[in-house]
Image (tube, rainbow, N blue to C red):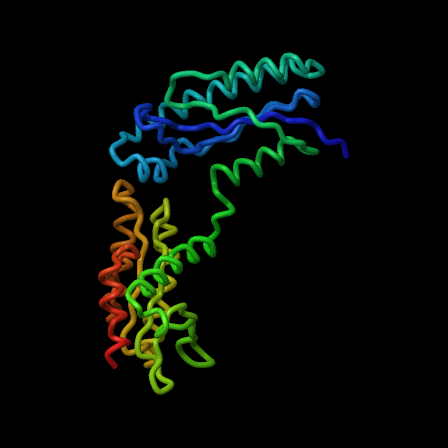
Length: 278
């Protein structure tokens, strides 16, 4: 198949020009050679990530700005469909006019060029990467939290006591990255847990899974003597997700699990210090 040169720009929400901080909220792509013009935006009602980053922002401001841009993009798309077929110059002018520098809540990043066989599929992939951050998988976030706990243990000279291990038996077990064993028995375990999700339902899905695993291990007397969950929480502005995370934390504590923020080095160190005095 033929590959076409496409231009694209990342759409950024920048509510406070004074700080220069922004969040990627969409991508627009044009392919003059094929007459394609398209854009993909975050859902207008999905505000968790935005309010989590800009904690003092009224979400109505974001929703109104996104709704306005959505309507403008739909209008331009109709124009390109009517006048852009076989008119490379019109498609190019439409893209250039849309992405010109401006002082607004929604701005466009620098224009970039990419070769694509299917412009619409390329737009989807760009959106998944730059907005949805598909590269940042669950495994990616887990690794980031594990590195943080590992560094905390290293600074406290406790790293050597903790190794990855399986807790439980052949029929029921979990894998934990930081386990202290003495005489072949698990004494302490530290499990990082990322509850910093945009939606409460996602918090309940992940957190509920671990509550169930802990409860079942306890029922079969397979839990270690002491276990800590180092938890990454949603932003304080994301009230729904924050409440969900606190509910999960409460349920873990009901199972005699110690819970600390993943950034609370003092609490993690205090818990892990039990390995050095046994």
